[in-house]
Length: 439
Ligand code: ADP
Image 1 (cartoon, rainbow, N blue to C red):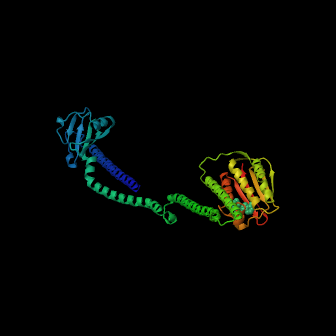
Image 2: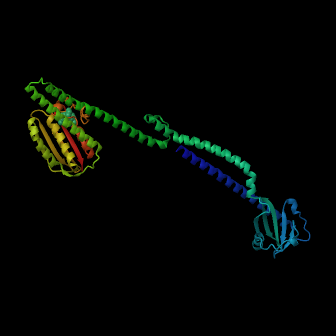
Image 3: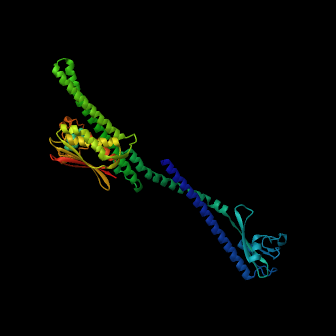
C-alpha cells in the first residue's frame, strides 16, 4: 500500500512537472510570436507612414540593417521589389496567405517554417494606398528552438522538482501510513497514537470491537470456569458415594441412602447440563428463530396449571389474571420464560405465600407480570441476579434444584424479543418481575 501511494504521488508529480514545462514553453513561444509580430507591425507602419516604398524607383530604406526582409507585391501578385532577392526572378505571390489577406482586408500575417528546422519566417503584409502590398518579414526562433535552447535548464529544473516531489511524497506517504501501522502493531494503546481527523471514527470502531472481543473472551472464560466448578460438585458427590458402596463397607440402609444421593446429584447434573446447552444455543442461535402470533395469556394459563402441584407442595397459592393478549414471539422461548419466572416465584416464596401472574394489554404493549410475596432480593443483589450462575443464597437455590442460569436465560429471551425487563423487589416482602412486549 505504501509503495502504491508513493508511486501514485510520484506519477502525479512527474505529470505535473511535464505539463508545467510544456505549457510554459508554449506560453513563452506565444509571447515571442506576439512580440515579433508586434515588431513587424511597427516596422510596417513606420515604412508606410514615411512613404519609403511609395516611389518604387527611389527606395532609400536598407531593410537588412534591421534584420528584415521587405517585399513589395503588385495587386496581381507580381513581385515588384524584394530587399533580399532579384524581384524579377521571384514567382507570383498572389496565393501567399498573408498577401491574399492584405489584398482582401488591408492586412495579413503568417508564420512559415524556414529553411532551417529551428527557425521560422514571420510575415506581415499591409495594403498601400496605391494598391500594392508591402510585406515585412523577419526570421526568428520557433518552438523547437526555444525548447532546445532552454532544454538543459528545464531538465535541471525538472530533476530538482522531481527530487523535491519524491521527498514530499515519501514524507506524506509515511505520515499517512504511520498511524495505521502503529495501530496494527499495538491494538491495546490506540488512544496514545497521534492520528489525523479522518482516522478517528475508524479507531473508535476498532477500539469498540476490540473491547467487545476482549469482554466476550473474558465472559467465556469466566463461564467455562463456572461450568467446570458447578459440574464438579455433584460429580464429586456421585464419585464419593459410589466409592463407599463399592468398598462394601456401607450397610444395606446406607446403600439405599447413598443411591438416593447419587440419583439426586445425577439429576442435578442433567438439569445443569440442560440449562448450559440451552444458554449456548441462545448464544450462537445458528438456527432461524420462528416467530408467530401467540396468546400469552393462554400460554401463562398452561404454565400455571402445570406448576399448580409444585406450588401446593411449597404451600403457595398460584393464580393468574388478565385476558387474552397476542405477542409476536417464539413458542418454546415463551414457555421457558413463563416457566422460569413462575418457578422462581414459587421456589423463593414463603409458606402460605402467593404468586400472582398477570397478562395485560395496553395500546402499545403487552405486559406479563409475575409477582410473589416471597423472600425478596436486597438492593445489592438486584442488578446481578441476571448474571450466569449468580445466586443470592447458593444453598437455597441448590436445595430447590436451581442452577443459577434461569434468569440468565430469561434475560436472553427478553433481549431476543426486543422486550423490556423490569425488576422490583424488597427483601422479605416479595418480588415482581415485568416483561413488556412492544406491539
Ligand atoms: P436459580 O436456578 O438459582 O433459581 P436464577 O437464575 O433463576 O437461578 O435466579 C438467580 C438468583 O436470583 C436465585 O438464585 C435467587 O437468589 C434469585 N431469585 C430469582 N428469582 C427470585 C424471586 N422470585 N425471589 C427471590 N429471589 C429470586
